[in-house]
Amino acid sequence: MGIISEFYGRLGEDILKATYQHVFLTFTALVIALVIALPLGIFLAKTRFKKLSGLILSIAGVIQTIPSLAMIALIVVIFALIRLPTIGRLPGIVALVLYALLPLLRNTYTGIKQVDPVIIEVARGMGMKERQILFSVELPLSLPVITAGIRIATVWTIGIATLVGLIGAGGLGDLIIRGLRTIRIDYLLAGTVPAALLALVSDWIISRLERWLTPEGLETGG
Image 1 (tube, rainbow, N blue to C red):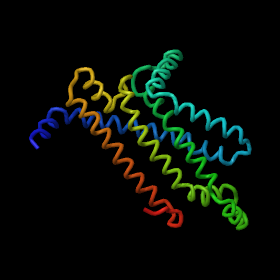
Image 2: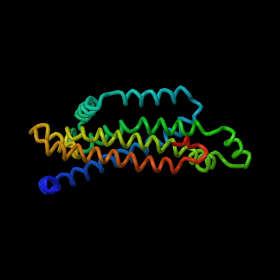
Image 3: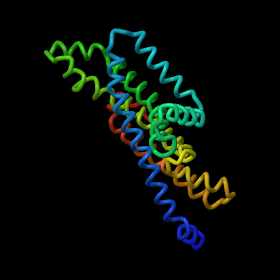
Image 4: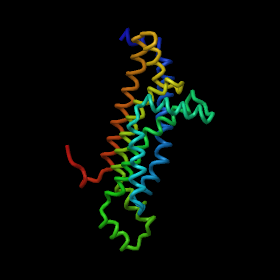
């Protein structure tokens, strides 16, 4: 206990500050990505232009395959060319949003598409309009799949957010970078342990939410 209290006494303030920044970066990126991916995923699932759906999902998939450091560097280059700040939270959040988009977009699309057409036809037979069917039938039935996408995106974003410290975005990555530069184990632990705990706790909370939203008849058990 003495070692832990001494460790926290030296780095506790830095850990709390960096954790707050990390949560802010993650939450902001996820909210922006959700605002983009949710309506876009619904549109792609319901549009008659199937090739457009495939194209946009493929583009999102290509973005996901770009290595994290390469994506951050690419954003810095693009921002430099269009005279936007290349250091700080803005380029960092843009990188995180791009990485969060695919699971959110894909799961929204999949969630809407997997709704049984028979249920939709019954809703139409009851006189429900398309907007009512979307909000009262399709989205509620899609929530477990969409929540699974949020779970994946959250864990990914928390991990990648450690890298945006390289461009001055803040977060727990700052402590990790400081530890690597100075070969200080205490700084490395101060950055990696809270980041791992954030990912584990977030995954557990959202998995419980996902299970709660899943109808009993659709649960696989275990």
